[in-house]
Amino acid sequence: MTAISTISELLSQSGSQYRIYDLGRKIDKINKQDFLKIEENQLPYPFPAQGHACLTIVFWQKKTPEPYLWFVKLPLDERGLLNQGARNHFIAIIIEALGAQLNSEPSKAQAERLKENPYHFTPSQYKLAALNSLIKVELKQKPSKHYPLAQQYISGQLDWSKWHNIAIQGITDIAARLEQPITSTQTNNQAISENIQHYAQEVLLPLCTALENQILPVNVLNSIITLYLAETTDPITQQYLLRALGSTSDHPYVVDLIIKLLQQEQLDQDLFIAISARCWLALQQTTVLMIFLEKLVSNGDTALFTAIFKDLVAIPSIRPILFQCMRDPNRSKALAAAIGQLFNQLGA
Image (cartoon, rainbow, N blue to C red):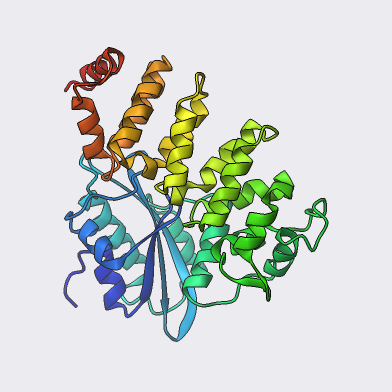
């Protein structure tokens, strides 16, 4: 066998079926062609999180359709390109532990050895549940045993106070199957749209966390935005509702909401963090990003400005727009000064 130089090669040569997901910010699927280009440093990593690519590699053999998961955290360079040395080291660890075929279930000792490698990370339980639901949909497998009860709750077949037996896995199954029917006249997304204002917080918050990984239909978008703007909605719930809009934050309705929020006189730092960390798709418009930056600098928190700027500039889809905003002749003196100070700190 010729030397294996990429993870893609390792998986392909072993005859594995596989999928690649990013778990750094939210859960985003990365297609195989793009992943190979990322491995060959032809593309910057699209979803960097604190200078790293946080990957989930899901693979399986045709004869054993139960997938095996690797959680891999690899460093990126200042351009957002994958650190080749770290990637090669990870491949060497895999081959040493399992061989190059990957055609048998790892033993307990092998699995433990893999988890001890320096590139392994452990996702939160919420992300694990959401990923499990997404993989089952991708592989056309049945949802978990918790799904029917979650459907009963979101559709109002259970009293809103009867949430205690609703499992997180059932909630993430709902989010991953928004178009599936509950009855002959109602789908999961219709039930959420009609009833979201009634859900107990113990169900609503994890539902929002799961929905952030989905492109939402307009009816659900409208219901989330309406609930966000309701006078009775508390700040914690608002944070989660905004988070739920993450994968759909480039939709005009969400962009309008974010502009409206940024036009408020006083803003909490959590709002800036939620927009930049989860709803960055809305910032791919120059106008919106400029409003965001101006409001952020007017907040007066230099450390927050620096942290968010460094986070945004690492996102390939945001980086050129951010540089364009930096050069905008109409930027405020405060923004120009903050950018100048930041680059002085960086030694630019």
